[in-house]
Image 1 (cartoon, rainbow, N blue to C red):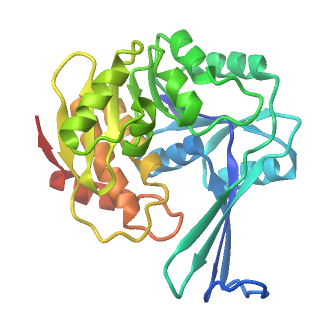
Image 2 (cartoon, rainbow, N blue to C red):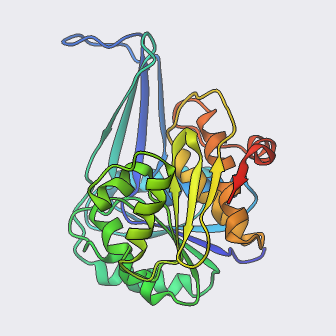
Length: 310
């Protein structure tokens, strides 16, 4: 079997616990109508989608305790090539409760265990990254990990294409780096410029301002149902209109979009086409219920429907 060409990095993975109830009311014991325990975390989900898209990847994750063991078992069950970096703390859980009566979903995200031995994590990732073409750094950072963790990796892994999907301070510090592609959402972009872009022209303006902060190659701004905007450091902006789909859940759409982009890059597509594939994957994920991710037949069907304009 050929070596994987993609390494995904998840510093703060999670065991996603999802339940649904007939309806939520306070102060009562509510019967769970279903109960699922699934792999979670940005890079882990990207690896899961890449597998569905036929792209080999290796999923590095920092795990600890019994919850970490369960994650590794779930990864093995799905055929994910997982590499465990053992930590002293216990891997976090994330909880999603769906109210069937209203259709609302309530998501509770825990911060994760504190990790102080980040030097060994960097060395571990750098060693694995030497064997791949694309490195995906995705998800938040747990307590104790420096805000510039992703920035350090992007500036170190010069031989590989780096794709980053971060948030908060980790995102801001990544934008000072030489990352090849960074994927902020519209909301995350607004937080970086401290003003709210009112339309696509202002989204482009905000992205250009952000690109001036470092050496990032391009921003792929995800816009939900409005598609995406590719703003490269050098070159014109490209706009992508998402296909019309019936939205069942937006959970996992961002991770699916990142995986679609990476799948396009691995297939040799230029970035402008890879982003189109990413929009199709994100739209396909929105069609699936709950925490399910996109499926390849849906991505293939939606790809021709993604409209591209300069």
